[in-house]
Amino acid sequence: MTLFEAMEISPFTHWGAQLRRMQPPDVEAVLEIERRNFGDPWTRRAFLTEIEAAPVSQPLVVEYEERIIGYVVPWFVADELQIADIAIHEDFRRRGLARQIIMHLCEAAQQKNCTAAHLEVRHTNTAARQLYESLGFQITTVRRAYYGPAEDALLMSKNLIS
Ligand SMILES: CC(C)(COP(=O)(O)OP(=O)(O)OC[C@H]1O[C@@H](n2cnc3c(N)ncnc32)[C@H](O)[C@@H]1OP(=O)(O)O)[C@@H](O)C(=O)NCCC(=O)NCCS
Image 1 (cartoon, helix red, strand yellow):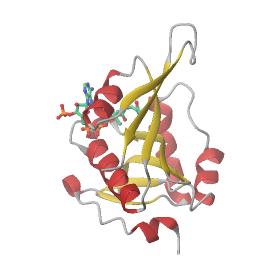
Image 2 (cartoon, protein in one colour):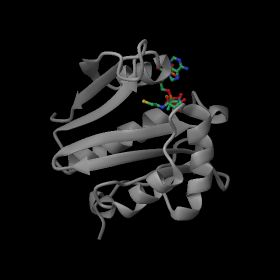
Image 3 (cartoon, helix red, strand yellow):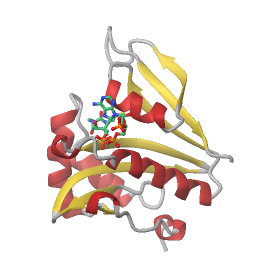
């Protein structure tokens, strides 16, 4: 039994989209979204490695009408959740999908007695920052010029202990 199954994450039904485990045949569609959104995209090998890294890594895709429209790569290490990568195709944004995915992961992590969720975001990524802040993530560390001279990295965390 994988950790994902052990966490008993309930079916994802938001906006008619399904959240399910990422499989190797999904990686091409995931890469297409990844490359459209990130200047330093993860490679095919990186996603395949994540799929193989279960149960520590539990990559998931969002599928809508047989199309991959988003994905998330959560890591479960010790008693912490780390959201390593997340993107939603631009045609399907502002429908609450990313919010529901992260809430879903945080609830599952809480059920496994995880104490905190962490992620990293570029300081200029307003959409992602607002999303995370709206979910209770707070900036814990600023890595100055981490992505280049004008781009800081923000480490954000959310306490999962209620
Ligand atoms: C960030 C991202 C994952 C959000 O996905 P999404 O499904 O559109 O987000 P949601 O619909 O769940 O938005 C939830 C909240 O986040 C905030 N938000 C999302 N997109 C926003 C935007 N473009 N501008 C301002 N706030 C935004 C809002 O508070 C929003 O709530 P609201 O729609 O009720 O106002 C998506 O924009 C994306 O894939 N971006 C490119 C990849 C990326 O930057 N990933 C994160 C790396 S750290």
